[in-house]
Amino acid sequence: MADYVLARKSRNIASSMVHVFLNILLGVGVVLITVLSGSPLIGIILVLVSKWRIFAVRSRYFFLNLKANLVDIIVGISVVLLAYSGGPSFLISDIILMVFYPIWLLFIKPLSSETATLVQSLIAVFLGISAATTISVGTNSILLVFLAFLVGYAASRHVLIQSNDKDFTLTTLVCGLVFAEIAWLSNSWSIVYTYENLGLSGVMIPQLAIILTIFAFVYNYARQAVIKFQDDFRFVHIIGPVVFGLMLIGVIVFFFSDPRFTILIK
Image (cartoon, rainbow, N blue to C red; front, side):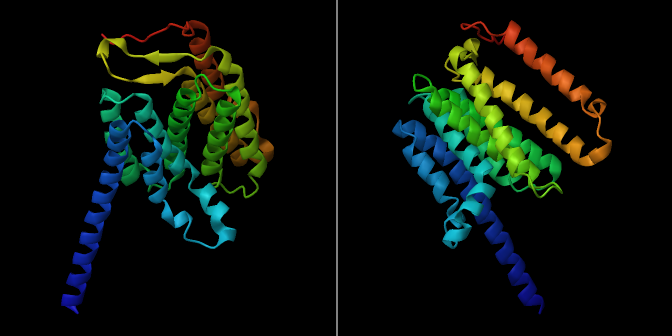
């Protein structure tokens, strides 16, 4: 019996080590392959292949699995697209992505608490909108609007599926539509903050990604307050985060919207 337990523990340790190794390999590999090949295609395929369990089900469960894994897929594909947008040279941004994606796969994605799901959603919003803004430059605005809707829908659903409210379809659709509307309005004056003093850093942060991440946080806070207080809900329960979020967005829009604006790192 003792030998069986020892053998079982050894197999568990070995499988855990393999799991860690494969996730690190995937996280680093998709960025390396994307930069070296100068194409996002292989990286995106690797991200989708890593989610093979989505497809290994009966057809009636396919879309359910797909929706349940949308946040993870958005983060993975966004990492690939952001690496691709930096060009064929290795930049500081590529190193950041190679460090971040394994951390996401190993430590952030497996978490399941309410706080963790919110953090996962906000990361998906920030990276997803950043990638969408980058790849939609010079294209029809419908691409950015659609991608923003998808990100908003996925992020909202990821959080709300953990709540006690089982009827959240309308809420997720509304969130997606608000994301799409804000993306459409901002498409005429896309602002991207860069870091010039780091040389070829490749670090670019779209203003839209910051704004929608703030909105996603406030939206989720308000939704949770409505569920918590129900019939006793009053605006005073959410006034703090709402006012702070609106003020922060106002400062960003009115004071940091020069089309040539650049953040300088001293």
